[in-house]
Length: 126
Image 1: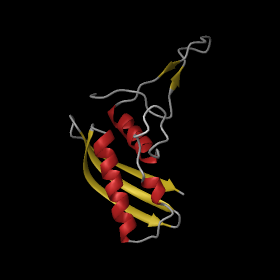
Image 2: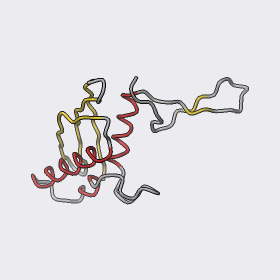
Image 3: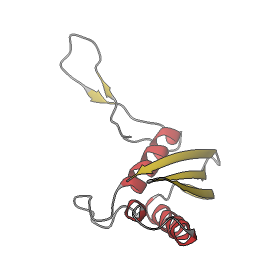
Image 4: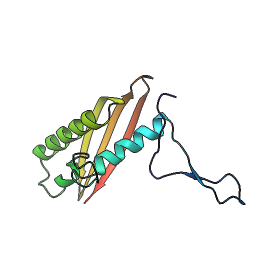
């Protein structure tokens, strides 16, 4: 395991039913990185306390006309955010699809260090 950390939603672990102590479970490479990517792409720039530069502007594109320009912008903003904020991955492929008021992203990436190929599908609602 190369990376460990907190993933969202948090996993709370109680050692036994009689204990009032609760610990937070750590996530492994795959779960942690997927959680980080979801959080990154769904966080609007400026909304994260103490780090106003974190996030992506992908969700702000939902009101725009459904055309090739929209898909090009979504692709650009996604790649930019991942390169800037998620150093644990190398992008392999990225496809966006738009339908109704939603954007669907299919992202393929390699985990640095292990070379493991992962696929993540994200649906961003308006």
